[in-house]
Structure formats: C-alpha cells, structure tokens
Image (cartoon, rainbow, N blue to C red; front, side, top):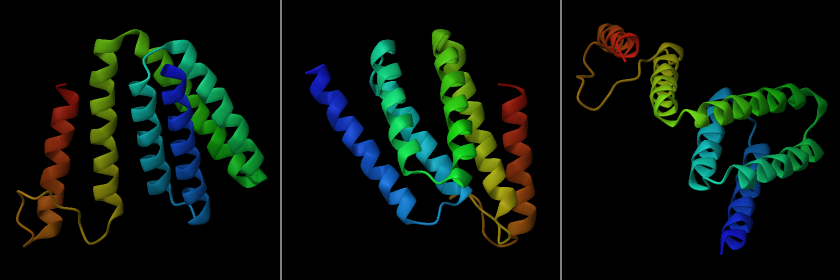
Length: 144
C-alpha cells in the first residue's frame, strides 16, 4: 500500500513539474510548487521514503532543467533539507511553517502594486489597509 501511495504521489509531482515547466516560471509559481511539495512530504511521514522520493525527484528535474534553472533547483533542494532538519522538532516545525506562510503573504502584499486585501478588509483605500495588514502580520510573526 505504501509503495502504491508513493508511486501515485510521484506521478502527481511529475505532472505538476511538467505543468510548471510549460508555463514560464514566476517566483510565485515556485513558491506554490514548494508548498505543494511540502504538503506531499508531510503526507508520507516515513523519513526514508521521503528521502528516496526527494532524490528521485531531483534527478528527474535535473534531466528536464536547463542550466539557468539549476540554481533554483539547488535552492529548492536546500529548502527541502532544511525542512527535513526541522521535521525532527515537529512542534517548532509547525510554528516555523506558519511564520513562513505569513512572510510569503507579506511578500505578496508588497509585490502587488494594486494591493492585496483579505476578505474581511475593505477595498476602499487599498494602500493604507495594505500597510495595516502588513503591520498586523508582522506583529503576529514577532510574537509567535
């Protein structure tokens, strides 16, 4: 059963990768992809399995990649390794993931010129509300 699961997840990952390759990759896409991968990794808790899958994935990606993309891949690998390290301390790991997500959101807010708003925020004066949200998330992160 576990093997079956592994194969299916691998296939899914490969499909996602292919799709990403088809589109011109923006950084946002990279982030999303990383998140997806992390979710996948979380699903299979067994460390050895995860390692194997990671290695396979890396090889496959290397095959597909051009040299310019190599750096991104390496960065991703490093991220993965860090995640693996953090997984040892599971409680802290969750906190860190939350923090990461928050930072990503803040980044998105900053990047988008027209202003990214949460559902509960009014869209009237996007700039000021934007600033507010950033402040709010910042405080959340600091006092995590």
